[in-house]
Length: 363
Image (cartoon, rainbow, N blue to C red):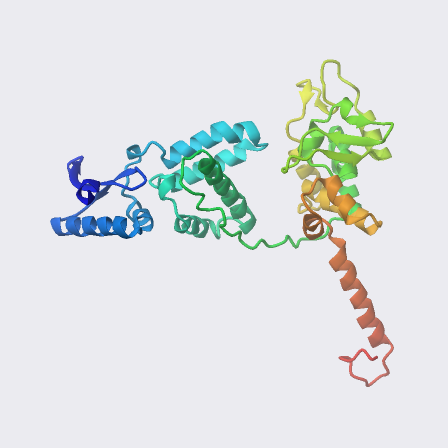
């Protein structure tokens, strides 16, 4: 039985071992000499007997496996995942496609059934230094979900990445966005885009959610906006309709035949991307670091400082938990605490008599 699982053969004029693994997968492994072939064959047979064949196969497959040997190659599974799941379910298929193309290039010779955490470790190490930890985490989340999808469809025997840890992400520590800076950027903004960014500023919504606003989503009587484009967790966002947001919406004339509130007068349909006008405006105002996405934490911070409960802010922003809101969006707590400590330190030193030690603030 053992001899039937590992047999000598030839492929393209080169000597190979043809291996029939216990999970029905077939692969080819090259060998350099008769001694090398016998040694590899014995190692493989013993690993099948003692149950250690999976990690051994992962090592042997680095650069050795012909993808045509298995119907569920990494490329085939990734393509099926993209066509069957990503295009139908994901809001950003272009980003996921770029991730999957990178995975396919990196793991071309590693069928999913032979994938191990070591492969993931090597990928993370390869990406480290090229992009941020947050970007790597997003890529690995895509890979992890692909394996979960493949496991549910019996394409792999287990989800090898189910408990793969995230990298520690460094919170962005740039200058704090303020209403005064936002106003200076708005003053430089192309007038056609001022209403769009006003609604973003007044609701804390994402740009993509505002660009697809339609009149039926505006409830003037209850003063609410319902954003049809759901969050990453599938939630529908309902935000308050402020006077400023309502005026911004009313400032754009309705276009007959166009369902969207904000539209491109040249194409007669919605704006598909309003990124560049903001980038030009922030550069002209002298604040190139102020991203459009920073309007969301500015919104959350202002609400928090005005006394709004964190839970309400979190729900309005469409976050999965209050912890996300507190960590990434409310920027005031640490700064206010630091300012209070500074006042205590400087106030205490100011009350000291000449000649006393400045390192002691007194009782």
